[in-house]
Length: 132
Image (cartoon, rainbow, N blue to C red):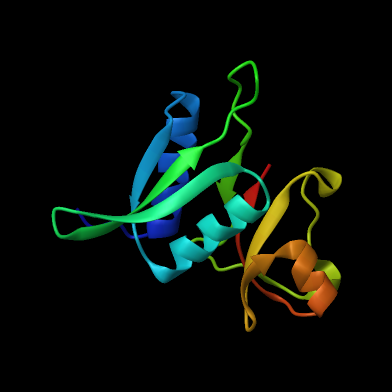
């Protein structure tokens, strides 16, 4: 199966698994996806992740996080830059998600980082996705 936007596919798989209250979800691996998952782990949106190999292919297994009443920690995931329309911003115009309660994942010259870190480092880049 050919996917034209693998990042959007990853976010959709996480969103669907979250809505169905699954414990884990497997995603085909890439360097960019791994960096996004590391940010989700660091910011506390997922429990953990690990790289696995099944049937000769590499996957990232993401363990989803829920609160005491089994409500998902991730309330929303949305892709900002799409293959047909890339969205870039400087650090001065960095959008805030839910007044600071969500995060913006950005691809910069310093790597894939959150919007908050991009403002601290004073670098702009391509807006990948928002998480809240």
